[in-house]
Structure formats: C-alpha cells, structure tokens
Length: 192
Image 1 (cartoon, helix red, strand yellow):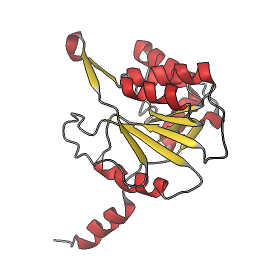
Image 2 (cartoon, helix red, strand yellow):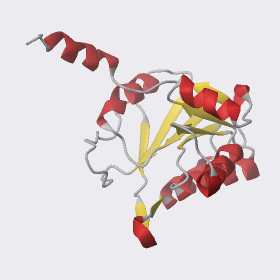
Image 3 (cartoon, rainbow, N blue to C red):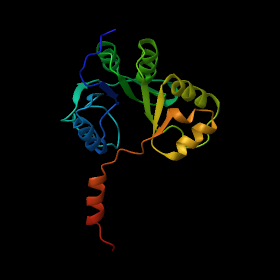
Image 4 (cartoon, helix red, strand yellow):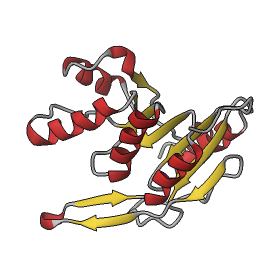
C-alpha cells in the first residue's frame, strides 16, 4: 500500500459520464483546497437524451472509457476498466462511485475498497419505490458492499431504512443540479 503523505486527501469520483448539470458541482469541489479530486469518466459516453459536459477545469481528470456489454433481452452492463486501474494505482483516501448494479465498475470498486481498506461510497437514487425479488437482492448486495450511500432524496433513505439499512450509512445529498443556472432560467420565464 502506498504511504499517505501530508498531501490533501485524494477523492476519486467515478462516473460513466459528466452530465452538463454536474459541471458546477465539480468546479465547486475542485476549488476546495482541503482535497484533491480525481474525476474518472468517459468524455464520449453514449448516453441518449443527456447533454454531456467536458472534463472539469478545477479537478484532475482521467478518461475512463465506458464499455457496454449487451446481454439477451435488451439488458446491458457497463464497464470502465481504466477507473479500476486508477484506483489500484492511486489508492485514494475515498472513492465515490456511480451506484448502479448494472455498472460492473461499481462492483469492482466496492470489492477493491474492501480489499485495500478504501471507503467506497455509492452515489445513487437508492430506491424509488417498493422493490423485491432478484432485482432487490442484487441491488442490496451492491449497496451492502459499500461503506455508505449518497442518496438523492429523503424518500430513498426511508425506504432503505425500512429494508434494514443502518441510518448512519445513508447520506442524503439531494441532486447536483446547477442552482444558479436554474434560478437564472426561472427568472427569464414569464407567465403566459
């Protein structure tokens, strides 16, 4: 294991892509000198109906190309081997990974976190409604491999607590929309 130095803690943020609405968040995080942020994402990901942003200016960035694995019945899995390699190479202080059970990268990063003692937090919707059966079991296994979940809302937190998750592992961070841009657009809208 690499020895930790007096450098700011390294936070790795793994995402399939950088949605346009997340750019302001990444720029804000990058201005915080208490941490180093390394963003691992595919700048050319094929995400229908989602405008993408370029690499953030204030964070370190490494391209982690997305590979899509097509399964029968229209199912797909996503894999970013460069993200896994970067975590093995850099041994960050914490990893924040996209928390979808369809992302093989999330599975690998949570397992590596267990092996290397690196906290891995999953950034996820969590649950949006009642979920059971195989789908829930798979999602639950992934969530339980992580150190904690960063959730979009209080509803997801309540659902997961009801499913037996410890409240102290569930952190509601809401969405990362660009509030300034939203306010500016709202102010330009006039009632008809």
